[in-house]
Length: 538
Image (tube, rainbow, N blue to C red; front, side):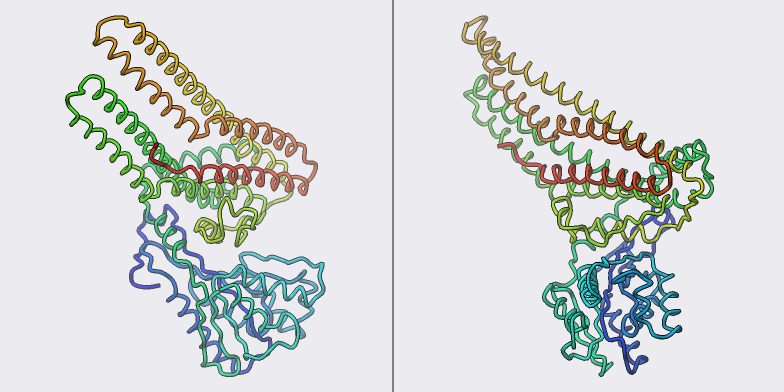
């Protein structure tokens, strides 16, 4: 991982830095000769993957091998990757385990499969609707689509049928997936085809997140506040708070850090945005003041130039420091951890290796936030759900999650509508005062100085109203208020439905529906907000 990666401090460990996750896919023959020599070459391939990574200063690397645990190449690579400290295993099966395990002829092979499967952090099963060969082909393509690098142990010959290693290698080449080809019949020969390569940006942005400084006292205070809230809710619901302590501390440590940083960059972004409009308004005021009161001193107009340059510089700093993108990315992480806590309590998997295509407007597979969340979540403490106390879980989830979100969205609805209403009223007042100022100027009331003042107001107040309207529109106060109002209605319906769940399975479906509702609401917010970037008001 390189000497540039520093050891984490005690405070860093407390604040749970997120490792960079690198997914290694596997494809290869089931029957292999020279397994000892091949294992040595696989270790060399793993080292080559580490060398592909961009330098990072604060971020450790966590390898994850994605495999169906077939005999031969799959298991060989899995066992070598798992020897690397902190490495994880994710398993993808072409169909149900009971059907898949029939492919392994000996009891020893089946036992090895079960032993490796027990080490997996996630197990996914593809659809069982297609014929067997097509299921294997679908699985091979899935591995390529989901991995960062593919290790293929292949003899270089054409496949005898569908779903062979040759087809998977060709598919990797077509899609640009980085490929490490180890020749099965010549173990020492290794070919690296970089394809599109490993995108460095996600690694750099994760490293930037891990490098963010959060004051320990602020972090500890917020973490303790959150822990106290959930412990009290757990006791009120009749749940043993001590059994939840590990998952609460782990998840909330990530949530609190992301939440603090999201709020920080939201304030910076909004501050920059307000500064831009204020500077533009001041520039208009300078221009109006000079032309009306000091026409003989054009040098005053240089101040307008300075103000406009300052506004342009603020736009540049905002984009250079990425305040806007950091705000929405860190908010994404915070919201994912908040929901994931409740999914963990009921043992629902929330880790999709790549987002589906229909979510690409919200975030794409190349964005760092998706693998970062999965990486962090793979290290969570495991919690064994006790189905017998599902009624207690139901109360806890409803009160500490749904009811808490109902209160949040109700408060957000009122706050955003209040701001929309206040700024709308202010704009109308300013336009009304503009009309009054123009009429007084035209009527010639008062001294020349007073009439000049009326002219100044007539020029400045519409600009003030326009600035207020621009901020109101840019921040979507009305839309956000309406969205939160709808969320209150949805969440209240979900809470009522969840409380009436007659059994654990119905309860689980309600929990999944609640998580999907909140995820889609956040995705909608993200799609809108990510395209609202600061611009010079011209």
